[in-house]
Image (cartoon, rainbow, N blue to C red; front, side, top):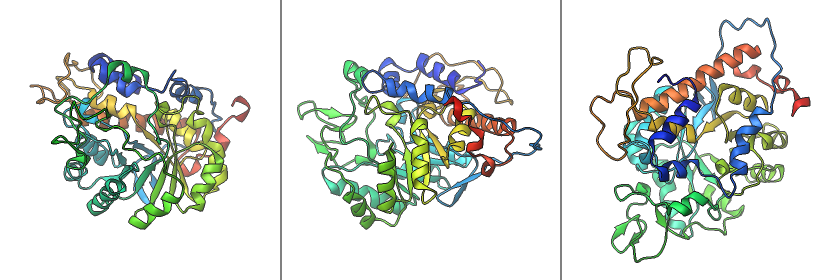
Length: 396
């Protein structure tokens, strides 16, 4: 089956991942209104293309935090990649290195930060951070990633508590025994089981003991984090102009407009709907990025037109990891025979030529190709020509 768009990868992943794994990745909070609106909001936006602009050459390159990337799409922090493919985050890191874009590594990775760096030593990486009740846990991982050459910290600020994800509760979701949150090896020791919770030792929440996140986190903790590191600090989870202004006042270097993929507060605005007021408030003082709902090159173009410097994809990267085919011709777009079994956590199947890393690369390449085409059809020769004049505001 030829994989033509990101929806093809979504359908393949839904068919081949276990129900519990699919439900975990797909989950939104409560009724999933915000999750679904992240996608629908892009479809409400119409474009105003310019013509006769000589688009024989279109340059998709941009910079984030002063570093050039091949196009303005990176990988958002998503947990537990080994559920989709046995190499997990290592494969994701190699794919983003090959494509030359930014990979935000999740705290809740099933590969360690050291393994990720070793697999893709030349990759451009940021690290996504939570603040824990035991602040030493957060401090130690900040020092680890800075020493390893990660180039920014992405502080997730919209999870004082975990949102209610109904299917995870119904499925009693837990990591399988062969997987763990490797960044916490030796950190959460419970009954002799590193980074996992013994059956008689209380509840587990997504691979670590429950109630470890610190709900008392506040703006003063930005200063605390700045005292620990010289890395740029980017706040992920801002949806209002008031918080955008506070972020600038507290000296952070970037904002990711995010509602956690609709997995936290159901009823949050779609991120693309929240973007304009944040861009207007920031006024270029720091960079603004966006995640949530990006599925096509047109979505990327719309987000940049409304002021995002770069966008990040979460679920589509995992769909790419889950894609495996037996035979791939010299043409990567050619029809290929899909594997009928998912072997997450096991040896690569014999004859499996297109897998994990290549799936992520193809997801990114499809988005890059679509974005370049949309730029040309809209009359934009480089990303600096993408602006709000492209947006038909009367239709918003």
